Image 1 (tube, rainbow, N blue to C red):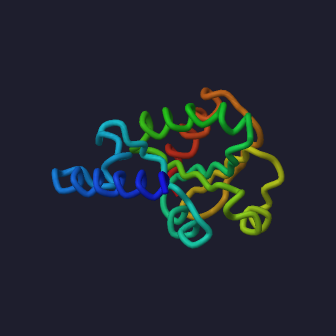
Image 2 (image 1 turned 135 degrees about the vertical axis):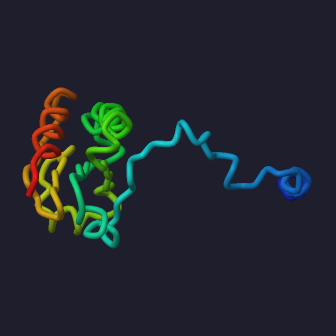
Length: 143
């Protein structure tokens, strides 16, 4: 009975708050300047997102320690080099079969595409300098 009463009070409180400009979606929205330019990839949008320009695809998993170590570096690169490279992340736990089809054997794996064609891949944790080197090498190439 206490659980039902608590739930009723909670629903009432939320219904009173929502009309005053707080939506359920805005509760977890970050301010515009804090949003990451990293694209969330899936099996369905993968080809479209990697088709044009220089694209880094980070195959990762939440349980992967090295993936968590490289994530802030990728976020920095996505902000610093937003004119040169698109960075996308694909969670292998959500797309296991797709990751296997892409030849991912190690986490993290970053697959680098130039206009839809894979040009190289980086396995494991690497330095930010190494990733910048790759960005500069492939963004300066004219095909």
